[in-house]
Image (cartoon, rainbow, N blue to C red; front, side, top):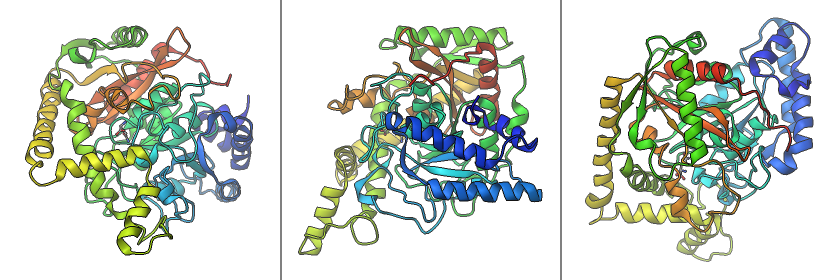
Length: 485
Ligand code: GLN
């Protein structure tokens, strides 16, 4: 067994016992990257020297008795999390050479625990997309099947973890970008409650929807990372002052007393047969472990896509106004006037999906249209939140598919943005309502593609999701590995 195959928990034990060092783990991941990265394409930047240096420091710290909870664990970070001194491109040409002068709060937190940052993961440009194909530099591939998408927008994070290039990754989820790639790549991915994790240093896409969360190979690793990244941060006024429980202690065998809600609207036409079978089987497994199954309804689900694709682009067009060639990033040097410079910078710097969102958002916010679009969408957003509140009176968590289909072929939907938007239908509502959601591997299609199961819960009840996920993992014992790439 190679060191890169261990879980974080196992690797920590091995280091504690002195069988492995941070240097061993880091070298093992770098060798794995050298072997598979040409196919996986999970990294925009690989910081080989930096990683080896961090590993050396981690080993020294451990010897001195100061090992943090991630001491010596090699991780990747989605390339929209600010890393001091390390390029942060957001998958965009406009930030191709941008080197942040500071670390995001989550980055400081994992550094303080001794993590080794291997590099920055491929992603859809500014996190806009569901396949990572809008990335300006590289497009990750699904480690389970050549020629299939890894999902997105945190596609590089998911592909890198699934292919054992790194032990875990941090991504962001605005409408499903952690849960969906985790599902398509057969790993665990959690979107925490809005406000649970500081967004300071996360490049803003849609500020009222964005959350940072972990992508890991096991639920135990996910709980560990949640323990580390959660909590109030004075640098993010939307982070919430709430006690962070020890998520690891919620990982107990058995689900006695837990009510599992099955939303009628999530199992409708358009749901792939294999996906439905896998989710229904998972429900049975959880039932055997003591959960009580109840049917619930989320009647406004059909409006989620329309609401999200008004609110997210509206916030995005405002957030992306800062990329104007003046402060930082790419500047069109051929321009002769200031106006030409703005125009040239943004026309050449942004890719077509980002431009599409800016146009939609600008239109939706323009005077005369605001009431009909943005305001109306915000009102329906409240109805979506109320759906969850009513459902959570009848159940403790909601179980469903993550996406209506498994991963599709690369290039298949690149000319059809609407069909890609529609594939987000089952993940958007958690962001609109601010509730937490997790994707846990549920099984494989006949075609050998992994399919995740989504569990959503009440605000700040990530512990319940982890508990259910842990029981699903134990009950299913899938045990397959994406090593055959
Ligand atoms: N696929 C969705 C979008 O393109 C969600 C992306 C995300 O969560 N960052 O907007």
